[in-house]
Image (cartoon, rainbow, N blue to C red):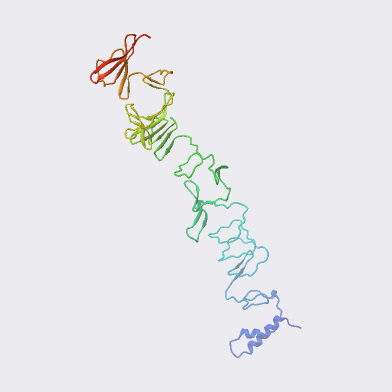
Length: 380
């Protein structure tokens, strides 16, 4: 009868034990002496197999590392070179680092920090969501590492984006609100109707509706259609106020134009910064300048003095005496009986008849002076 391998192994173990003179047995050397035999797994139950090894497994553990149950396999520490095919993970994966050479898909990816220098392709918007622990405010994009941190983040009160750096649009691009252009490279949109601009460059054209104030000096009142320089209460269509004097240009009674001072102030028309026509506060008018050489005054037309309805047939119409070369010329029916007169003054007879004189001439100065008739009137 042929013995099975287990019986043979037990007999050899018994002989080896009997042949030992001491109580100590070197198990490793003993096992090496055993002949290699096939042992069915059906013959092993319970107990520990020390220093187990095979062509695919080497056991060098000194404590339990793997626990196998019907519904799980628990491994304390696992080092794997390659995992083939798909695998599912329930729960969390904790790793000091994770390197993926292929595609990584995640339903939700929650991280504290992402470092990447790769192309990012998205088929949906980048979304920041709030929850009980986190707010959406203060979220956005940050660039750091060189100088101050550059930011594009959402802030509150009111909700707006904070941008820490300049924004440079490409050529021919625009800024719009509700699909209406508010700013392009050359123009402000027509919907922009209010501004607090404090400085403007060169303007080619300007249209303004409403009141205008320039540096608290120039004032335009849209209700009265008046412009004041130095005054916010102009008394003419154009008023220039300086040193307490207001010069106005406008109209009077809707029928006449006017230029002059609003209050009782003299008014000068000047050239070379010197008065040429002066109007006193009481209305007296001076042509020329007493402190300058006499000026030439040319009248291309007819001249009247104190005449409401000038005679169109004469060039000079004077309603009253005149002084010519220092002598008075006047009209009366008799020579004067009172008043100061100078030698050479003439009174023309305003009621001449045959046998009378053309007039009287002063032959001695005085009050009224001494007079003599001249130019007898005779029949022809």
